[in-house]
Every structure is written in structure tokens, then in C-alpha cells.
Image 1 (cartoon, rainbow, N blue to C red):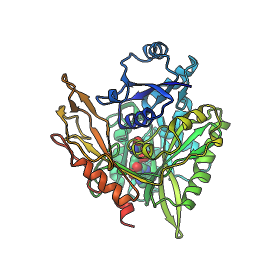
Image 2: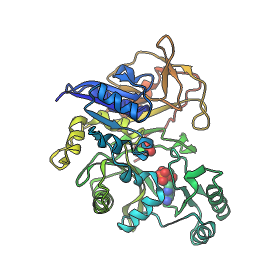
Image 3: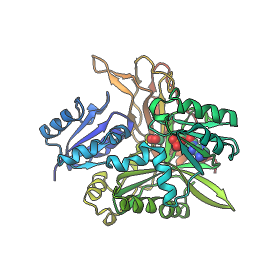
Image 4: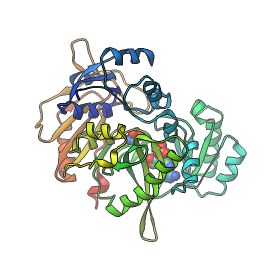
Length: 426
Ligand code: AMP
Ligand code: GLY
């Protein structure tokens, strides 16, 4: 079957998905909505008013498959809307997306399913939360219930700060409506992994574990961001740990979601904290996302040996168990180049200069970019682009990524110098 595929989103994640689909000779045309200033190099950018005009556009262009990249349209129920109009969609329903869109729902769900997670209390009542805060030892983690673009989590260093943060969230001054219900939880000490299960409602396949780098600055300093770089696979997740993640976290989640009538179809992304207990590594679930991670997607896509289109088709046909998902025996390291004032405020658009580089090193993925009237590339978003190094070792993949970055420049360009440091320190 010839596919006409529409990818919803405008980030590096969507560019990376489009990049591998473009190489598949079953993909006849590729569209992005809205796309970014570089996705037109892979396909056609569509502008639309949401969601009726989008549906009209899908019919007009004979689109055979829609892939939804970011969480916001999932929370708004775009996949249900499209499915109700007989559009093939690779994404979870609005009800299943609550695993990401409501932290309070997620915490109640996972503890009912006996999935290991930090001890917590969720409430809209200040006194109730204060009483729980007093039972914990700082640092104490305070989370706004709703979607906050990765910024709704505060690690408070004292009881006073924990209570003040809770009050600011509840009163709506910190995160508006998203903070009207607050989750307080114990702080888990360990290292983080991003794991991805492609789920068809019943079964799943796991992709290699990744590590993201959430803080802005080298050495894990500075504020949290959407992610400043990632690599995969990681030696920090061996077969034994992956088995525990599969058995203790992903499988019971799928089972419980199915049981409550909201089967999970699509990408289930577990933010895992690996905690050392009695000399054993134990995975705890910090959060679920219901889509590919960004920048994790940018390192997973180029390593796929099994075509992404097969993974998606088998998922939609509910026979993912029949698919053997194979990855290249290589490593990928992605380093984000961000704009001057990211993540605080948006910076004015500035031109990007890119010199030729040896394409055997890897490639560039474009994210927060737009084009000027002459077709030149402008840095216009927070995370502007990613240099993705590919090689047969993490060290070499990392070196390749930084080598590619030497060919890129724009005013105010910032990047971390230590992506993949945990793996390289082993
Ligand atoms: P979340 O959006 O829930 O993934 O939280 C954002 C970041 O806050 C995570 O990636 C962790 O680095 C940190 N975090 C969240 N919850 C905890 C916890 N219970 N213990 C330690 N760190 C946490
Ligand atoms: N890289 C983390 C995220 O996509 O939420």
C-alpha cells in the first residue's frame, strides 16, 4: 500500500520521524501540520484551523495515516476525533492520554496497579498536603497536576520551600489551572532512564533505553528544560533491569488500562528513576508520557532497522506481538543547540549558518527553526536544532555529534558539553 502520511507537530521529534519515513519507499507523500522551517525539505507543511480544517485537509490530500507527535493535541482528544471520522491514527485516545495529562490520575492509577513509584499524596487542600509534607524528609518533590511543558515539577530543599511552592501552585499563581491540584512526593535518589514501549492495547515491544539531559547547563546545572541531549542505547540499562521495567511497570500498566476500558495504543514513555536497594537496581516510575520523547526520538529513529512504518502498521492492526523489532548495532548521541534565552523567554529570530560536514558522522535534525523570505534558515524557537552523531561506540557517536556542531553557528547558540557523560564515566 502506498502511504500518504501526516505528522502532527513542529519539533525535532516530528522532523526525526519524517526523516526515517521519507526513506521508506512505501511512503508516497509526507505532510507536516504545522511543521517547522525545515520539514518542507522532507515533505509539505500544511496550515489548518483545528480540528475541522485539519480533517478536510486529510480528506483532500487522501492521507492514509496520521502520526501525532506532541502531548497537547492528545490531551485535547484529536486522536478520538480523527478515529471517529475513520482516519488511521497512531496515537493514544484522550482517556488513555490521561497517564500524561494528569499527574494525579497517573499516581492513583499506578499505585492501584502496584507499580513501584515514589510515595505521594495528591490533593487540592493545603492543610492535607502540609501534613504529608511533614512526614517526608527534604528534598521534597512538588508537582502541578496538569501539563506544564516539563516545568511543573519543583524540588524543594526545605519544609518551608515545599509548603510555599504548594501554596503558590494551589492559588494558581505558579501554573494557573494546571496547578489547582498538587502532587507531593518523596524524593528518589538514583539515575534516570527514558524507556519506550510501543503498545497495541494488549501487547508491546520495548525500544532500547535512552538517557535525556534535562538541565540547561553542563554538569547538570541550571533550570530544567525540555531536554538538552540524549543518547541510546545506554549501558546503564542491562537486560535484567529492562526485564524489571517490562514486568513491573509496562505490562501491569497495559493490563490495568485495558481492564478499565481505556486500552493504551501508541507510544508509552516511562520516565524511570533507577534506585539502588540492597545492591540491586530497582526501577521506579516517575512519570508517564504518551508519545515519543524529544530529544529521545531523535536518537531512536536513526537506529531502527525494522522500518518505523512496520512498527506503526502492526500496532494499528493490533498484532505488535508478531513483529520482531530490530535495531542497528550502533549508538546515537544527540546534542541540542538552543537559543540564547532558552528556557526563560523566546529570543529574536537570527540566521543560522551551516557549513558542509562529513555525512558519515551523522546528521542534523531541525526543531525551532523558521525560514526567512529568501528561504534562509532562522533560529526562532527555544531548542533550535540537534546534531546527531552515529557510530559503533558511544564515545565516537558523541565525538561525531560535537564535530557536526562545529559546522553550525547562530547568534547566542548554546549547548551542553557533556551529553552521554554518565555512560562515558563507566
Ligand atoms: P517529571 O515531569 O515528573 O518527570 O519530573 C521532572 C523531573 O523532576 C524528573 O525528570 C526528575 O529529574 C525530577 N523528579 C520528579 N519526581 C521525582 C522524584 N520523586 N524524586 C526525584 N526526582 C524527581
Ligand atoms: N525528553 C523528555 C520529554 O520529551 O518529555
